[in-house]
Image (cartoon, rainbow, N blue to C red; front, side, top):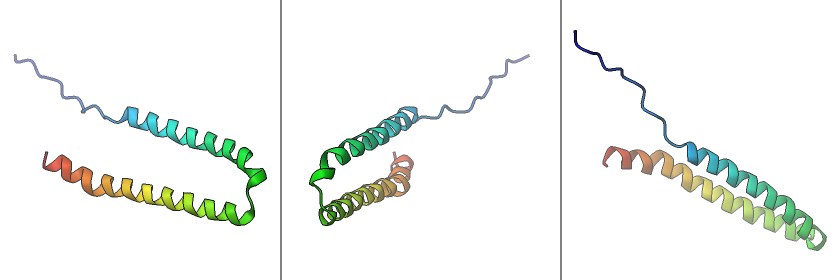
Length: 81
């Protein structure tokens, strides 16, 4: 009788990326808390709003770039690799 090989599901990659994402998000939250304490006495409402709009804009831009890479660049690279 021939020995049947067991077929196992391929291992998922990306565990380190998930951990890195969690660490980066926690560092951003910690930095925001520290910066709020440091900048609050010197920040007027107008300057705070301008800073918030700028930071949120850059955050949205970075998110858009990452989404584009995930949905368009990644699959193309995987297919034609």
